[in-house]
Picture (cartoon, rainbow, N blue to C red):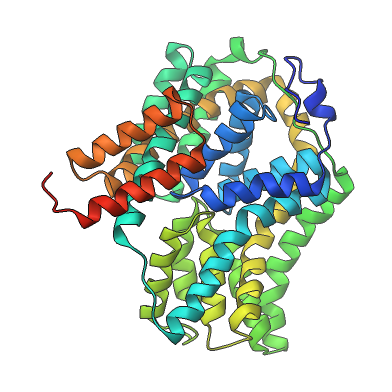
Length: 413
């Protein structure tokens, strides 16, 4: 059913149109097994859609990541929406988002209700095992992308400089800055590689529809705060706060936390203790960190609360990303065909490799590897993924079990 991409970008993959159900099942498996945060998710996506299914080439996938890094919102979820859109149109985009997002959202809503009723905690050992497998997944992705996107000394240099810059300034502006830096260097020095062929990402929405989506994104961003003043409804105020958080955050899921905390804690919708408990739970479930909004919505003292509140906040925080991806998609291929843009993308892709390399060290490595035993498990995970070519979901399950077992033994290492 899944046919490979051809070298000229006009082959079967461009003509393929998968059913929404097929796309949903593929992303559902990712939503159930993709632990480790947004950088790890991009590694899982690469293994699934570039290596296994050949839905995208390495270069097209890197271009897509570069685009999503420019857009506000969660890069991994936006990449998933874009892939679903390319494979199955609007239904495919919705199916991809639902499959990847609902598992963690449902788990966090259930956790919110269980924590309120009985109290609930995750096993620290199992969570640590999942963090270790994230190190292995990101390492595999960085190695695979570096071989394709940094084949010469100039692009290797861009990747290294980008990694150093992000480590020195790990905020959202640092991430956006290295991508801009990569693009400028590409335009100035990488014109010779600009003519390299790439695989077109199919566009299944019209330019008019894309323009309407972009207009709706900005209209909601401006109109919702005004609407809450005219109609002081709690549900509307909650939707506005979460939409604004999803629309204004750059740099991934963790960066949204201060915006959410400022939106829900000072006004008394959530206490600090509940907020931190939900954040801890969000670290232990697969899928995008933005589903933390589902926990907050289910725990709110204002608005509908429960399942309705969780779904309301979930839709509000992801709606900006959906509108942006659909809005930009019809114009993206024309930009990619431009010679200057191709040169810029060559530099940007090298900078993305550097960004992933920096993320591999911090926070992925520093938050998970604390001793020789952890290092041994990471090496085992890398060997299982690269050498033995085991499916990521099996490696995730195995590492969680090993982490749980290790936590029950005396820490002799």
